[in-house]
Length: 248
Image 1 (tube, one colour):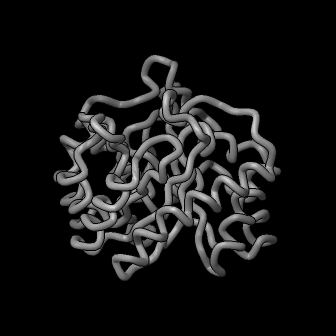
Image 2 (cartoon, rainbow, N blue to C red; image 1 turned 120 degrees about the vertical axis):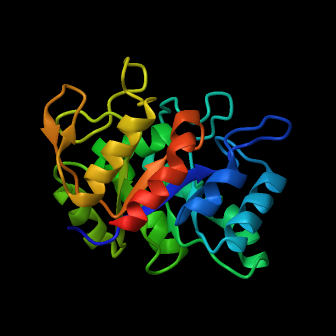
Image 3 (cartoon, rainbow, N blue to C red; image 1 turned 90 degrees about the vertical axis):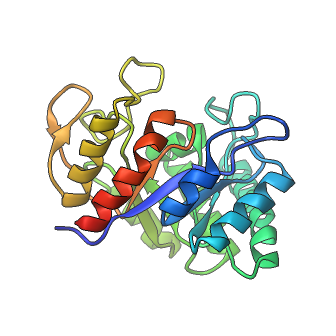
């Protein structure tokens, strides 16, 4: 069985009067909280409150930088250069880290969000830009990337940049045969059945097969497992998932 799988959740994604997710429920049950940094969601007070909640529960804080796309929640592709991507990630890490430092902690890792996260899966230049942002911000600051059937590419680029990697899997997303995520626009790309979410999570934690998008068995090695804060069904099963992972 692989090393203990951490549990993470995208959090702090409310914006002003608009509420997203259930941070008060989710953050106490996870090991890592990926906090929005203002580009796809969150405002300064939301960021401060999310940091406070994470610190109170002993949860690691990760920066969750995105393309500058509040209207699209950071899920729309943008034609940004590697230099722009590196600068926008640095900007967002720094914004969140200000609240962390004020609370006596620091940003522990970086997990890009949405369309930016997906762009790093296939674009070497953008992945290198994200790795450079981590390296320049602080030596040893890890980048969280998608766990796939083969992560040799990510490991090679990360080693060249001197940046640790965290490989992430998803409990509530369907996977294509190559280990990439099925596009959200396709029916069945997001799991809404709590039993399926729980079964996929446990299979990943045990290093066992689970059904991919096409029904064929697949297996992933991951360091951390994500539950989306904006998926109500995922949050509903989160307490059971925490208990299941702790029992392994």
